[in-house]
Image (cartoon, rainbow, N blue to C red; front, top):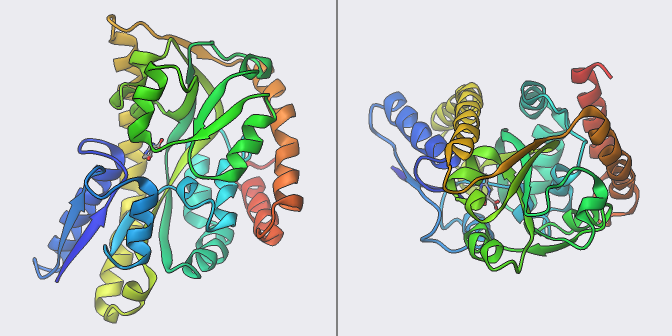
Length: 316
Ligand code: 6CS
């Protein structure tokens, strides 16, 4: 058997390296009977196109960011709330790995669309880049920020007075360079490897969210696997959780160092203080309630359960 595993990133970046490591492990465990081909971003269209390809069974496996399915699976937009998940990445990963709200309830929602999220994992905290130097919510006023395809992302930035524009990341460098877009959010490793720091003056370490990725399978395909093959897939997916946590951590550390070391493109790194974070939280928290109570098509029970699970992990 041969499976294709599409990712939204290129060689060397976390998602692609995940797929490559997954491929090695599947091959080892099956004595080479199953091969997996990792595919980097680019050849198969935009992130949204790739999600559709998986749904239609054009590929068997995909790393998918929930931000690109926000129009289809409304509940997946929960990942775009600001200051909802813990700031501590280890705690984030603990929630993502163990949450019943995500691994059972949200999974069932995705499965209605023929997408099975087999695991959720973080690619690290997201930081804001801009030319404005964002330190308080009012710094966002009048800025146009690039987001993924998730209507809720508009609300999250509207709360700070910014407008949003949905784009594929492949169009983002040019948009920032031409200043048709003023700002964006991504983990540090990605800001560096996609060279966004070259066309932005500042990066704000804001702790407003983390970047969640899902390892997904086409549901019909996954359900049709022989039990012994499915068990191997599940085992590798479970093992990969610790692997990818370490991978993102070292890539994010190296990314920050590389941004700082790039003297041709000087970037000011702004780390928000606790007081500054508190002013952002005050604006962001009403959006949590808006999401729970107003967004059509979401299940408030998933929100409530996840919130409780987060509180159990943070002890707050
Ligand atoms: O900003 C984005 O859309 C891209 N960011 C990351 C970290 N991975 C892939 C995604 O498409």
